[in-house]
Amino acid sequence: MKRFICTLIIGLVASATAHAEWKIAGERLRTNWAEQVTPESVLPEYPRPQLVRGEWQNLNGLWNYAITAADAAQPTSFEGEILVPFALESALSGVQKSLTERDALWYERTFSVPSKWLSQRVMLNFGAVDWQADVYVNDILVGSHTGGYTPFSFDITSALKKGAEQRLTVRVWDPTDKEQHPIGKQCFNPTGIWYTPVSGIWQTVWLEPVAKQNHIVAVTPTSDIRNGRLVIDTHCDKPQGLVSIEVKDGDTLVGSAKAVCGTPAIVHIPNAKLWSPDMPHLYTLKVSLTEGGKSVDCVESYAAMREFSTKRDEGGHLRLCLNGKPVFMYGPLDQGWWPDGLYTAPTDEALLSDVTFTKAIGFNTIRKHVKVEPARWYYHCDREGVIVWQDMPSMFFVRGRGLWGRNYMGAGTDSPVSERAKENFRKEWREVMDALRFFPSIGVWVPFNEAWGQFDTEQIAAWTKQYDPSRLVNAASGGNLRECGDIIDLHNYPAPAMPVHHAGFSVVLGEYGGIGYPMEEHLWWNKRNWGYIKFSSIAEVTDEYVKYAHELKPLIRQGLSAAIYTQTTDVEGEVNGILTYDRKVVKMDKERVRAVNQEIINCLK
Image 1: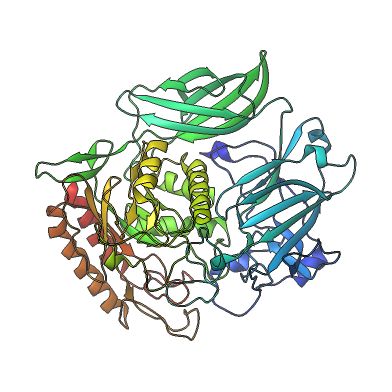
Image 2 (image 1 turned 180 degrees about the vertical axis):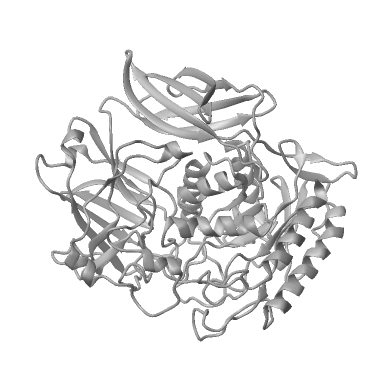
């Protein structure tokens, strides 16, 4: 995968004076990686590994910011500087202020366009902005976007001034839990399992040049292991031109194909190497676009040969399968929060570390819980070999209503969701799937968690399956108001338990455990720290974890196909992580945990 390392054209950075003024805000918990962050080096890695071009300009760094009334005009002066792409409320932003539904957050910076780009179109790309973003270049509105978890791009060519410094302004409005849209666990009053809000730009912002006449927008491979082929959809800005695809295993060409842009290209791969946690093999793709025999665009990408499915075993249990073989999917609930960056990991090394730690202690799966990560996180999962269950971030949660314990297997009713909220959810869920369906490590889509904002479950599950039939659908993890999708999922704390067996579904334990251990010097606050049960030593926590793991074995024989342990790390007031929130201490005996985890996974091998 070294070919993904491209020539970086680093954008304008703050001056040495500005750097001297910037510092991490507050005195709360931090990771070791936080000290590596400077305005001159903020997440410098190319942010879109699934579609790589050689030239780009990183706009991460110090921007001006201001907070105004939501209905106020663009400010003429700014309050200070904010370190992009860290959210306003985070320590690494250098600001650590709150934003309410009555406010607007404004960003501003300047940039220059390399002269050799002037004969091309210039695209402005955002990894994610929470929640509504209006983007201006030289005071011209180039586009708007709603939704806090997905990338978006604007062609800013017509707004650029020749031979001049360009001005970029972004207005953000983020009502968090005061409106009905997907927010995950953000809450204006964080406590227990609810966390600090995340407002504004929280993923990388960058520029790149593309050809004027046409360019590649997305490459989506789908593997067909039964027929030994990759089906590759290439979407272009305009539905014209010829796409040529080369598939390589290392330096060896193993297949190629051509297709008109917008139609699938089929690449046959003889004796294909299958992707799995044991052997996460990736093929390299080179995708070229030509028009009239002239090269227009060329990107690098990658793909894997793998298949997620279900199959009935000899005991009549419908098992989750990878590449046609039963696999017990076992891993942690992973919230993806950071004490210094909130939604944003301080560095790419930090982002990778949670993945490699999970694999190192013997898990093969991660449930990404009501959050969407930057593209590089999924790239790391693809390379390291970790199966991903991808949740949709939940909508608002009505306390006291919609709890999973009352809403299992048709016993409850839908959440009280407005038509506007349903529209927001459907739009954002489709955008999440569009953004992530490329990544081969994702094996399960999870539209709803428990009954948090759950509505029209059968329709959402059926649409999800129809939109991406290559993956399994867990319609409502721990909150099955209806029988639909591929999976029946129970949440049970603290000890594991078996869902009601159903012949038409695979049964899984979507959450269990939650063994708490509040470690002094590694706590987020001095308020009540929360866990389903609590212990006071690594030995006690490990003993309880191993005990629960052994209790899974008879359940697996009874048909259990997966289990998700809560959780990878502590998060704010939750102290039930395997790691402390600052990732500095492992709160269990790693060797004992790895050994028992491998025993569990091997139950179905």
